[in-house]
Figure: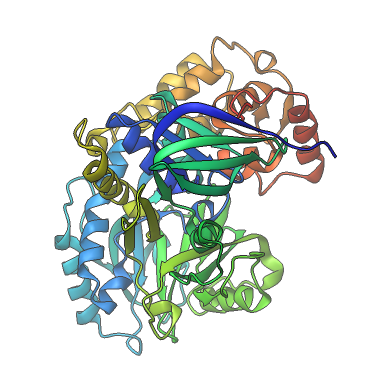
Length: 512
């Protein structure tokens, strides 16, 4: 095998970010917008870890009130409408129904909890909570007859992987160097700067980058990165907790979601998913000291089915699961007695005893990623000086240049221009790409203009866009992280996409 030689870039970046999940891309976007030069390296695909394996919710964390995490809940509640305005194509309001079981918790206590939830954070667009009669209507009809009373409240749904990709796209548009499929294999402090050795995992080629500050936002791998930097195996800053989800054919015929209390003190969500399915999750299970392989276990499938069956009229079994996924939450290791009680808040660790600085991100959740990013950039400013003011709270992510109430108007505009597409296809483009849909579809007048059809409404023009602007390299990237077409995709369709991708250039892959 030919020996790799590293090419060295003469450019000195202000910040190099390790990790292309929601925290890493959020930090890169915030920092480049404030005038800092930024390089980001992601070892695999964007959002290929925890950030594509969440419950797809922007929420305050109602259950965190039980553990008195009022500061975290307030911070998360304040972010819901910020993100809804920032990305109204991929973030949408959602109503949640909480059926009441007397043996679980007194009704008055649930009502008090939701009163606090309504008033703890800023709320302008989202309606407040209310009591709901479960003996009538579609919401109650899906549930067992012994459930007569419940509560309803607001949070938001999000396409989690696309949120990551859009942050990365905006960072790149503003001038950040975004290196996907690029692993940091070594970093040393030399002459008051970081000298970082990186390797492209697709080509095997190596290069170096220089940076004044190194930010470790590697999520579940944050301790492994620290071990690499320190040449040790002693870091135990995060508690790896596995959260698993199952997807079944839809159990109910309305757009609201459910939150269920379990006898073990945990809660699960049942959420409408991609028109035809119901998403059920999540579990909370200690994963072990290292990430390794991440797969749902049989007992987790059984647990989620049993939890849903305790509430729904329609019973499900493991045979009904059409798809499942698991992710690792890198919770800050606060020595809580069990995974459920471990804090969901983030900790920013600034190792400033040596220069240049190293900033590590422990924990966090998708809802508060923007606040986390702002705080990290404030630490960066303390070393490099303040340049431009904080800006992301009033910003728009790519494709989201319309109001939170304007999603239907955009869909109607697209339908009028691309009249040959079905309402379902227009809806998918609107909810996936927002105003970028017009860039993808261009002047197309018919399906023929969209190029080769790969199945499930996925055409050549869309794939070419995803390769050129969103770093897609495999069928999995396209079907599960850039779109949500993977559940119904056959192996034949996946193979066809991969063959097509193999013949395409990779314009956004790192070049050295």
